[in-house]
Image (cartoon, rainbow, N blue to C red; front, side, top):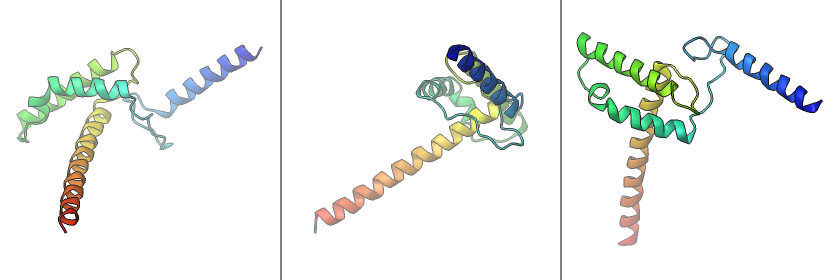
Length: 125
């Protein structure tokens, strides 16, 4: 009997999670966040972004370029969500994850440079 109870609990939890998010996967008014990206999702994102890198990293912001970028993010979202073992996510969620990942990477590189400079300064003293 415990197995049917846990199965029912799992189904209820899944329904509850689906109700908390809008159709695009973004949190609804309850403010609950989507689950964190798994290692598989991170790797999948890096591969997909590399396919569209020239478009989404274009510095121009005119109407035509922005339109191409939006279509590229929609394509990335479609390909991402069709992969086995990943959470369905909207183009906006994926774009935000990518932008935040770039910021973290730049911050890590900057911190590493500062640490290296500080180490060299005190090592030579």
